Amino acid sequence: MDWRCRCTLSLPDYYYMWPDYVPNREECIPMPSKPNVETAAAYYVHANANTSGCRLSYPEFYSSSRSQWSIDYKSANIEFRNNTRGGSLYIKQLNTASGARLRSRDGDHMYGMWQVRSLPTARTNSVTAFRISSRLSYQEVLAPATYQRLMGWSGNRTVTNTWTTLSINWQPTFVSWALDGRVVRTIRNGDMTSLGTFQSPTIAARVFFSIGTEGRGRFDAAGGPAVSNFNNFRRIICDLPEPRTLAELGPPWLTAVLYPAAVASSTGSA
Image 1 (cartoon, helix red, strand yellow):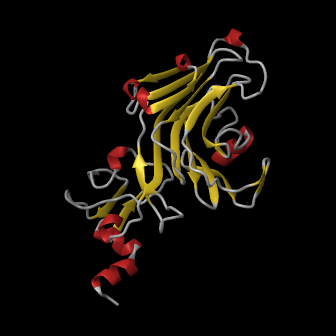
Image 2 (cartoon, rainbow, N blue to C red):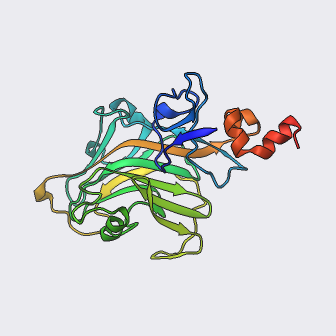
Image 3 (tube, rainbow, N blue to C red):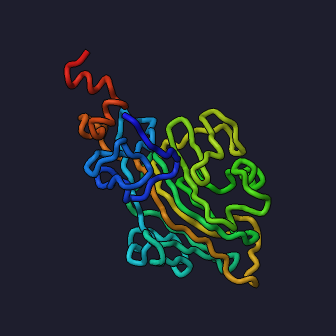
């Protein structure tokens, strides 16, 4: 079969979820394209595929979705807005002792991918964190000069002045961080880091967003509040039972390519 595909590490919008995807766009369309053709985008490989299945999840930041989040402190510094599809999250810091932190309320998960579009504050001694655990954070992953070079950005462009998509891919043997779909760092079990020998976390956790000084020093409140923005939050979380039938693995044209041995076994083919 001929294909027209665009490969990326970025998670798709919920519109593209199989089987509701309508094949009238350029992402991944079997050729020749037909109105009733079955299509799918294969975009994630789970290291524990033999023990669990994964699903796409789209937590929202709408004002009506506030109950989906646990606010650890400073509720007044957290704002949910309906200004984009899926809503937007605004978190702010007013002074050294004032910040904010919130977590998802739909349970702890282990392994998968977390992605969000972000514009964090650049204010001195105000630290914005997009984190799943203490070792799965975008905080201090790379120095700006390093990720600027890796991304091919000009000297004045950083994640604090340009909307950027952040991704964390958490696997049993490694963790990868990506900016706008491009991997900028991968740490594997046994690698040495500033915190010692790395070991991918083995305790289920949930995502949280926060803003605060993080022990960096005094925050100058004279410049007004520091504000960090997030939207388009998407996840792949691997909490489903292991797929046990070919139907659960996808449409026939896809399983024939990805799982030829399973297809041959089910049909009695050699």
